[in-house]
Image (tube, rainbow, N blue to C red; front, side, top):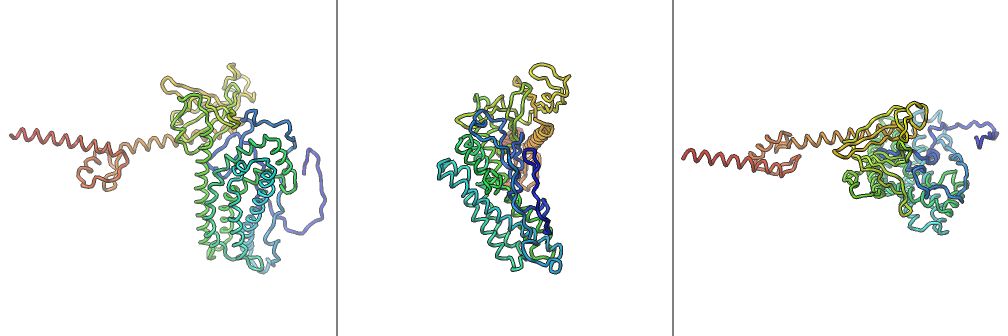
Length: 502
């Protein structure tokens, strides 16, 4: 291990025990790295990543305090990994095939992961929640906001662990788990409220860390052996990490299950169930995060308000960028609108003040700028192509009548820039497809027999049919107006014909 540039070696006696490869570590906490601030946050895969905030985008309120300890980040300590074949005394060479051993290892990993999860959740409550409440370091309301429904998750996972242990044979092997998972997995719908609360919980926790009592308490916990060098947020984020790991665990069990095994069908059903649950929670969590940021937008004037923002249900991505004057901006790409803001503090909360008018994605023009192509601070610096300040720029512009905007935005590296370009292009494609679909729907109707036909034909079919309550893909008032005009035309022609005959 390397600590502050010094190599420390600890000699141990050689061991004949099998060493589990890192790719198969069962400890969930060991899979979660310390939270790192990322310049771009994407919400298309909300549950697959931890919620984090850039410290650079925060005003002075969120800067380190004089009383906070400047302790270098320590390496996360992992739990000792356990293997099924090492835990139970099994003569694997004579009793089980290699594939069956792998199946038992995968089932044991599922069970051991539940045990570790329960231990971590109980630790979060016992070592963090209860002491901070007892010592009045935080109020009960603040702790309820930060910890959410964590308490309710403990008995849920204890139930699965109990079921798995009940079907385990005395020799440690497990024959069937599929039916247990099919019956238990729907309970994970209760994760909805916990995951949806994570953005608000992380924001409040970061804000409370500015209190020297909170910071001192959390730092002491971090330095204690029980924490394994994990901070409080790592523990609070463990349920989300576990949730998205279930499909991988079940696929691993299924991969080593023979086709004629009774578990085969149940495992396939269980995988479909958990994928549906994760997808549904992912959507709801994205909507919750989108609402959180929309509520923290500050409009300098009413003209900046846009229905495209109000109607947004997801944030495609957001993060910190700089303009060509070096001003730090926080940019949000909603589904149909790009919003450029500045991070400010309002009532001791991190908010986002609109920098310019929101730009509709459909009318946005995106340009990928070559390095050295941008003017900085009004002066031409194109000759200094190696200067870091003029790399990784792209431009967004918008023009609608007298209104026009042009922003040259700089990402912190080429990878981050490419992410922004991809996100904006995808949003433009979706907006264009939605516009084309809307145009087609406006020119076509659904006739009484279910056929999509042009408006004129559909109107004639409507007149010929006695049932006028057929479904349409346009406003029925337009159809009624067409019918009335045609009826009036027919009646006028009939009257003229009668007068001619007379």
